Image (cartoon, rainbow, N blue to C red; front, top):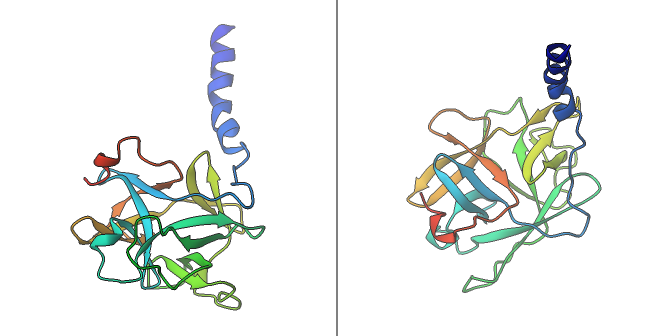
Length: 187
């Protein structure tokens, strides 16, 4: 009898986990995203030249580089503005929308578009972002869940973000939780 109940509980576990409601940040809440993985110890996501990177923005060649402070909207988009706490000059970009490339696109780079620029643009996906706990994910129109974020080192301490790219990249997870030990961010 006990074995039968145990088997039933174990068999239903995937349904409980997959059937759990996703978590979305309350509208108006601000958050940052941090990269975690084998080569990533909580590197912050930053904007540089319209593209998404993780690492130390001061190591970027872009004068517009800054950590992104995100908020969400009713379309499940991540809208970003510069966090100007630790920058010497104030970036000129604001209200940019995070995108990942559409599945039919050869360019795997993740970046940012000006607000509402994606209207009629079939090469990028800007909506469907959500959280499972503190982990960022993309929910497809068919209900599929993807977390295909990865990074390619472009200089020491800076990784360019890609979506579903395997050549020369390392998989990573984007989370809204800052590292507990800031000195461990660089790996």
